[in-house]
Length: 216
Image 1: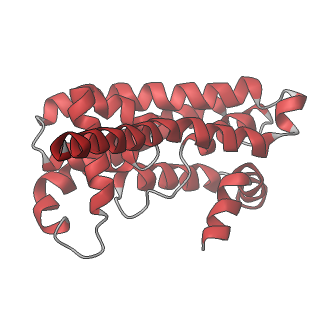
Image 2 (image 1 turned 60 degrees about the vertical axis):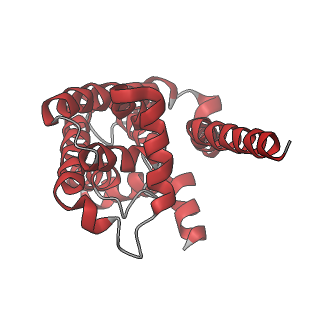
């Protein structure tokens, strides 16, 4: 399963290109579904997000999808996905967090993200894998005002989709990037994961200092 996920992430452009060639306009349905699920369902945080948007932009530059259609469509998918996840957290969060399959470590990381960034964490979380999926759930579970959440949700969706899709559109056709697209996807993943790594290391350092202080 891990190898399949890696293949999906590193070759997402090829998979999407093949699907577009074989199924035509259904590519729009597929992309909408992926973005909705990645942002709207806490059981699918492994789906590609940033790299997918970049790949979509590159495909648009090659004529496989229309950039003027796909950007609004994916913005809507991201908004609806987050809003759906928010209401799941608000209405059923208490029951869900008690289930054995629920990843409490993901929830803890996201809660720490909210503590540090406040309401704007909903926007910033768009650029952090896993946290992106759990942020709306956490906002709903924590009873953030729905109107306030919706404002952050819309802003985050617009900025997130525009940045990566437009970057893919203008950069994806440059030969050096097109010929090393796997490295670009890896770089996107590494950079987007840095906030989580930094927070984990920071937390461990603080825990170590607290332990040393208590022992002295």
